[in-house]
Image (cartoon, rainbow, N blue to C red; front, side):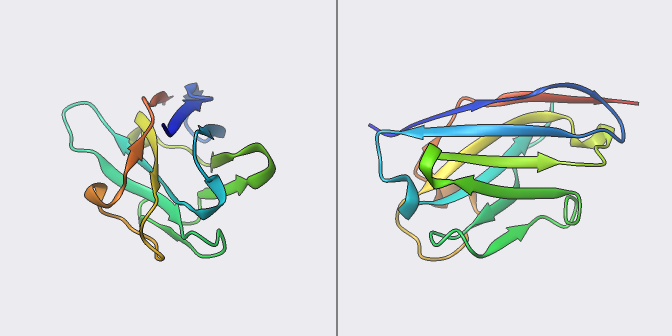
Length: 125
């Protein structure tokens, strides 16, 4: 059973930085394409960032490009999302997800097989 556990969320002032983590267990971490999504109150879950199964190619939503960085530590079975220059509109629950089947980066929620429970990020102005 593959499990994803997010951590590192919190309250941060606009312009600040935060790094959220996602620990993966129960599967072969290094072969998964991984993604981060977020969901703001009253809104649908949206794609934020992802990398392909090689861990080399990355892709970002336009709203976070240049501010967020997705990375992984294979030795720790952990994927990270470093968030800089945070804005109030970045507020939401951040979820990590694992895609076991695709060779490519996926941005659609339905393409991901495993999900974490989410971690809350709140940015205040």
